[in-house]
Length: 285
Ligand SMILES: NC(=O)c1ccc[n+]([C@@H]2O[C@H](COP(=O)([O-])OP(=O)(O)OC[C@H]3O[C@@H](n4cnc5c(N)ncnc54)[C@H](OP(=O)(O)O)[C@@H]3O)[C@@H](O)[C@H]2O)c1
Image 1 (cartoon, rainbow, N blue to C red):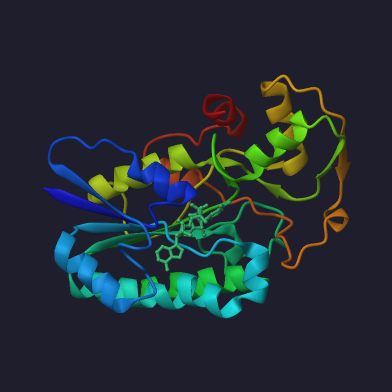
Image 2: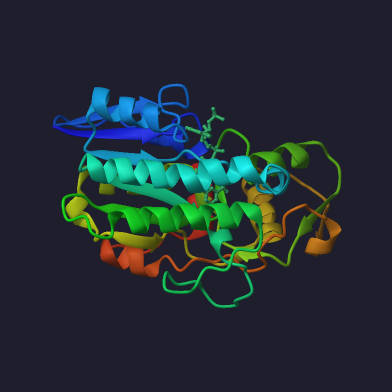
């Protein structure tokens, strides 16, 4: 029996992870924040003792990028310090760890696809806190030969439900108003369901992929403006859209201009091609 524990099960990614029906020989343990608070060592210990997982998939995070600038301490606690606790306890109990990180660990000043050996240089509190979390995981697992870790960085996550760019843009498109949409930030949309499926594949079969940091994503890049246009076409919405620059939407946290994470090495390791972002959008929405 391989037991797979999901932390952060109520989130966009966590809820997709929690919906999988696993074949015989696997057990899924779904933990929301009440059942497992990643910032609380006692809560982590309790979850490890009572559920005895073989692998934890950590989808828990503080993801409000702008709010992180004002609530830096909390963001660092959930995205950074908590990973030190979680990773150390995983190693102590010989439990594998799959952790999810973000394009925000980079400043976005490159103009070709980010590779996993590019040095992170986060521009804001959220990116810093996620980078701290990544480093804590690597440090805890460095000398461990009884369990493995994987860090998957992703960007531009969306879904056919919940709160994300795609759902916001559909709602705004249906309002009939004309919309200004940012056309100078580059990345690739990635749906939560297919990402969750890949994480679950690794959770089920740890021999599939070597330990380390990987970039997940679709083939791209594109801009938010083009993503929105593709959504409107797909939904048959006639919307008056105006491409604009990032300056039109001042935000507390600086947005990376270029966020495209090269998905090819990961997909090659798994023996497949990255899915085209537009094909995936049609499939998911
Ligand atoms: N969204 C994106 O565009 C995006 C892009 C790239 C990478 N990522 C990464 O992908 C991962 C999943 O993101 P998401 O979009 O699914 O985020 P999300 O929807 O904000 O979900 C995060 C979840 O974490 C839970 N959580 C917060 N603090 C916790 C704690 N102390 N202990 C346990 N759970 C806690 C939240 O619980 P409550 O429901 O109780 O608040 C929430 O359910 C994150 O690591 C994020 O950094 C996201």
